[in-house]
Image: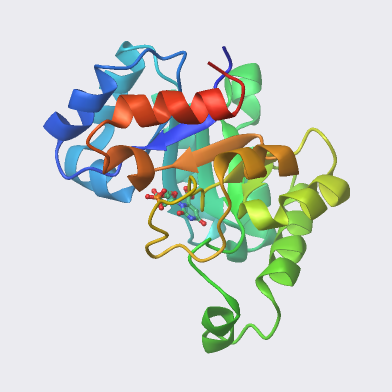
Length: 232
Ligand SMILES: O=C(O)c1cc(=O)[nH]c(=O)n1[C@@H]1O[C@H](COP(=O)(O)O)[C@@H](O)[C@H]1O
């Protein structure tokens, strides 16, 4: 089974994260390591997940000058992660340099994707930082720029997937957080959809954290989501 679900391992401790990871088979999902766990545990934690057979999305959302971002992306490639991301708002040259530094890795290069507009943001949040367009318009703009830089895809909300699929084509990876199964707490997310709606719209991968990790029965929730996608 090629799972579409990427579980966001946003835990405070390694113990809590491994308590979940050790109950699941790598065929059920991929795993995302983000800022909290990477800051606490570093590369050793990623290596532990690799040794258990999981694909890892290293979600550090690099955003810096081109040289600095490219070198961080190279470090991620050396770590052997499956996917790594940067902020598209770092600009075209930053993205091009990050892509270029992966050339020597050939087929072993991680998927390199950009974050467009965070799924926690809506119109008012963009306005407050001086962006006077809708999230949809801004996502479209940054997705086009990302594709021009030669990256593999973008992180966007499921609400933009249908239009991006049209604009960017079938091979461009669309990775969507902002996933909330029916009845679950939206929390700080703003642009959301259910797992099956996101897949129907054309998402390649669903990033799901708290609906799974904060559940008292995370494995059952994960299996239920997979089943709702026809992946059981
Ligand atoms: O890059 C990401 O993964 C990301 C981008 C984005 O726009 N929104 C977003 O929520 N994320 C991440 O996706 C995860 C979503 O977690 P939950 O809201 O708990 O499902 C978190 O780890 C976020 O850091």
